[in-house]
Length: 419
Image 1: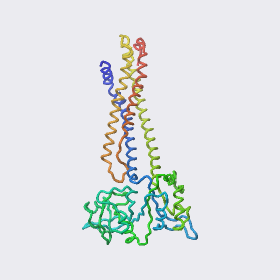
Image 2: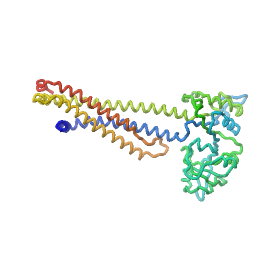
Image 3: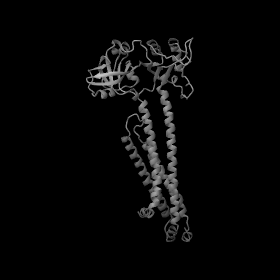
């Protein structure tokens, strides 16, 4: 109890010095917490933007040729037809499959409310590929496709723009044709805006009678997933290396679509796994960078504590000499100096940690969940706790060095010491 009061007395006598030392410690922990929280928020935001898709999903789109083919010029626009869709559907690697036909600028009308929506013609597998959550009613099924039913599924944005979420069983006018709403689903990508989904066969019969489209979505067998990933990012001015699956697709589609199978721009292929791997690589680099900055900041705090303790020992040299001369054991001096260091690092370390956590919680409340890719800036509590514990241990070491020096001071030398 006497040692604790002595430690507190020493700290109270040097409040400004203690405050500066504590600030260095608290700032180091605070910066580490904020950096970890920010990196996790960025990671969660990116995963929120891309995480709704299955990891083994693949997108295909028709592009523009970049090479001539059998007398045909380059720069021709490509389109898929049901024939190309069947070729892809029959591949052994493919599990789920859906043609996706997008028609922009369709006017949706319900009562006196109007909204401009993106109309999508899709197949039943679309829900599983995109993990599309249905809040009310049901999703489109095979029977809707086979019978070309005039039914639709609207997303939440559409219900908000039409001013009602009571649409199940009601008729929604899309252009000049009425469709019965059978379900309300979650929103898609933000760039799509309000979206209405109808059966592919219905869309092709009414809106795209030429049966041409430019997008297909599918999933790959888990065993064949590695054949889709190139492991190489696209570099500016250079073609991306084709994967085994891409080469197989282009070789199968080239004769029917009339393009050179080496032409990567005629048919674009992008896998969610490839995107995920690149994203994870980038986030790993960010986390490593954050840890390096945090560790360097912690080290600077420890150095600050060590320097302050050395100054404290130097200032109290005569005091220690007198105490030793009147019989104070060296252990008492050691505990006093080391205890002062531990108290400063522990107290201010936890102040920095809880302040950082509070700031991150405030950020979570204030940052809008819109297009900004930042979600749930949570901290890795075990990592922060370990970092704080390391700071306390480092404080013990930082205080032990000058404390051992104080123990070895001879009383006669201490009494004759000049600052």
